[in-house]
Length: 353
Image (cartoon, rainbow, N blue to C red; front, top):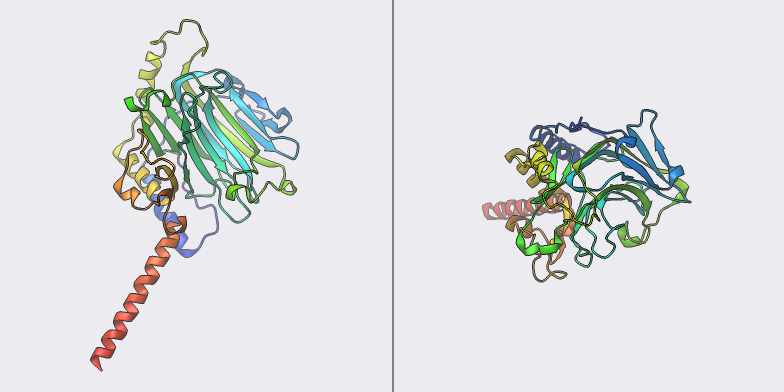
């Protein structure tokens, strides 16, 4: 339960093979599996929309969400939570998935329409032969005009096997995980004020048509000749403090025991090994960060911790230099070294003549 998958699941080039095995080995052996208690669907969740496109397994411990030409689908936690650990093993649709978004997120937008909080995993489909990408984001107190998204690629094919995606939300920090690898941490500070999510939220999972923006800025749309598109969820986890978001006299200490309980779990601590795994992930798989987008945010947002090594890889737009591909940059660098070596060799030969 919560074990990191370490298998090769796609056809790749020799260079990619070395790259894949290095990072799979690093992520597998630098992190330990979380100790989690899972729920059946009926124990913690309810259908949200597209009821005919939500298919539960016979044992009730997994669910499929479908998107077809008529509708997408989704589910929601039966209660709202003040802080918690929200997690699921997810497998995404395969083949042509352009225009599709599969989302796993917490929100209270249905209750606080103008001041809602949100924590997001959003998986962005692609044309056939191109990989899924995804983004994380968060909002506090309706601060949707200040998007805090980061975008990434993955070191595996998320349509071939299940991987665990998790969000930890406490009074002091937010951590996004893939399997047991932390990929992003937001540490609360006083300067953030109401921008830090602070009100009870529900957990949502959805699949929907986002043709207007999801793939290449809307260039590639959903092609329903490939429908139905199926995303699968299992290993569902809701560890948190149930809370009525609109109670007249909320108890500010009602969740103190749960907060202490969360702090006692292994997912609350980024160990040195996990910190190293997060650093490796961000070195090789992040391709946009709002923290480095100085055109959009001339003044760095208060929650951003600027890493000088990370900063030098980004343009003022927050996107990677060298066309956004670390592998492309590596190939260019090797080619330049070879050319310099050949030039040096020719120069030496001419000198010897």
